[in-house]
Amino acid sequence: MSTNALVKLDNAKNDELIQLVSFMLADEEYGVEVLKVREIIRMPNITKMPNVPSHVEGIINLRGKVIPIISMRRRFNLMESENNTQTRIIIMDVVGTLTGFIVDAVSEVIRIHSSEIQPPPSMMLSGGASQEFITGVYNHAERLLIIMDIDRMFSDDERDSFSDIG
Image 1: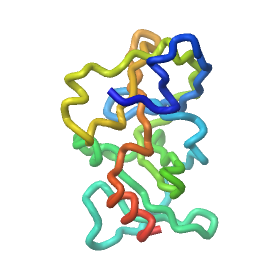
Image 2: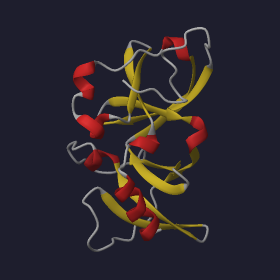
Image 3: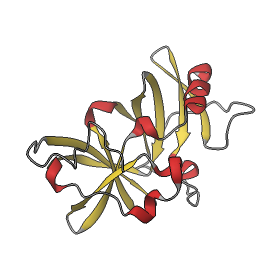
Image 4: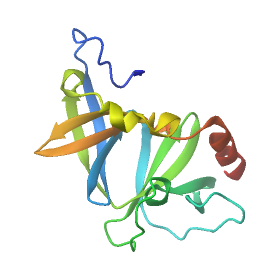
């Protein structure tokens, strides 16, 4: 398993304090590194774009900047649900490109030690590169928090297409 700067499983001596933004998606809790998150906004009107992958919801104008919006439910092949008052868009820096991600709700900022993060089960990683973005699991209040590296969620070609959209 490869590791990254967020999760240093090989180096228990370096027990860093990590801050994660946790969010809900289909009754599961996920976390991303707080430094990747630029802002969290309520659902605005989203402009649909033709000929984009199904998980690309469209684009928004955020203070004069065009931002591509990704449906996390579609990206993870989860059942669609109606947006509600808890639905949010998390604007994140994905390899230098601002991208919005629709989530069911944003929970909290969690501070944990890197030593508390367990590697994901090897069965989860057998999906190949598509599962490489899952970097660890944390037992949080009797629930498992799935930790993601948002930079690894998309292939280079996908990231290039987002920068073309925005």
